Image 1: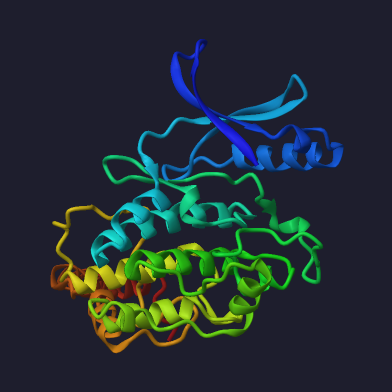
Image 2: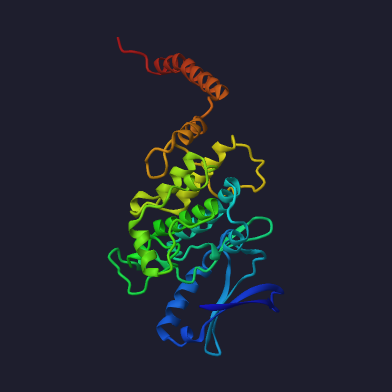
Length: 333
């Protein structure tokens, strides 16, 4: 779709990345307008886990977009080199992806093409989501909208995208689940050489439980992943923020709330505060007990004592005010 160059901004004296789209895309007036709208929407996103868009335009009949330069590599390259990741490292990265994509969801945007190629990882393990080029404002998507063109990559897109239906934040959540599945098992839940067959698998087939491929995956995390990969959007976590909170809570409970992990989790996603997931269905027992314990507030006896003293003081003034009242208004005999 495009070629990306590393460049240098002479005015602001900083390295940048410039994505130059293929000329056949640039020649389409309809595509130019769609690109302008989507690039403008992406430029309005400002989050530490999203690649910043600095500028976009048309030059020499070629569309381009100027972005923040991110040192490091994409997650797909890392997975090709390593095969799979341990649970702590995988969750630490996916929670960051959830933070960035969740921010976009709150801004009314769906990424539509979440895949490890679009997740950049820096040497210090900061993850940044890039290529919101096909994201669209949710307000412009009619619930019954259908598309002749299927958005997203067949290996990672959701069942509803595979069916040509309008994507939603839950579609991005499904794609994040596919990525986490690949990170933990070293393989994709669905694989086929034919895109049409891939689309059918996403719509109809149940993936092999990741715990069967990697016994080191804890049962609660296995259950979370299977929920994320539900065929119906309403059965998943509805936004990336919700998935991030559940994964962060799982990580904290699995590590005993110790923050000494090799890769620190971001504090941009608060831990869940109830014993159920954001959709209201129960969390796995291992998570529920931990979250319930976390959400139980400690009793502040000092504040309670001060409140009782204040109440007693106010109560002691009642006889005084009665005396003053009857002195000024003696009863008539």
